[in-house]
Length: 229
Image 1 (cartoon, rainbow, N blue to C red):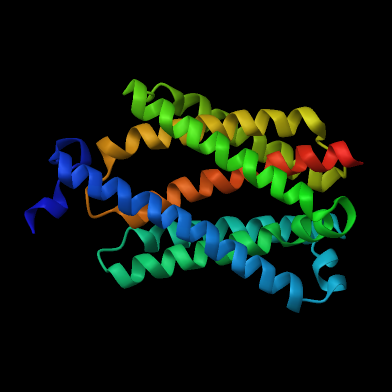
Image 2: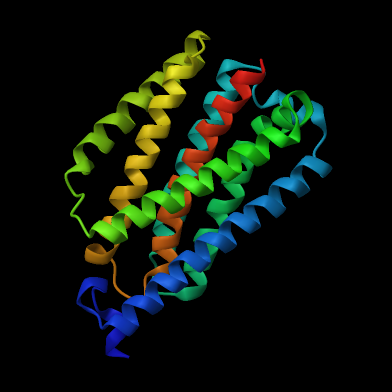
């Protein structure tokens, strides 16, 4: 059992391989579960209720605030010693991601076409695979990205809140910038997992990567939708 408390970078090749296999399997399952939950929500929740989530500035701010609080709870749960609690945290995060995506997926489906969602998903997964391969193939230390990601995250959050409060559109270039930020986050997290996570923390690692993938998908989809306007 001692192997389960080892830092990934200090574990044997077999244990590292097993950790990465479990981590990326959980990321894939999280994406599939998100897709199933999102589809169920689209089919069962009335359109008026979905659109009401973005019909007012303060309603959307409330949604963002609830998402932030639930995300903090999910992150706390997913690093619990209990495996059941870890899965509870991952499941909670998947559900709140589905809720936050609900209005945009609905609008994309009925106004831009479902092919836009598929195209954005393919680009997102391809970019994620490429960024992951970059980290593993170069074996470079990307810890220097932490400061830029943190500052960029606070700036983008402030702009999102300001946009919701004052009703202005952040535009295409903001989405492009957020794609860059999400890409940097994927590179950083993939690089840091081996030094900050133990070999039994694959559920927590998968949540971190899933969160970055969903952020990347959000803004890639926004870019695709803007081209259809």
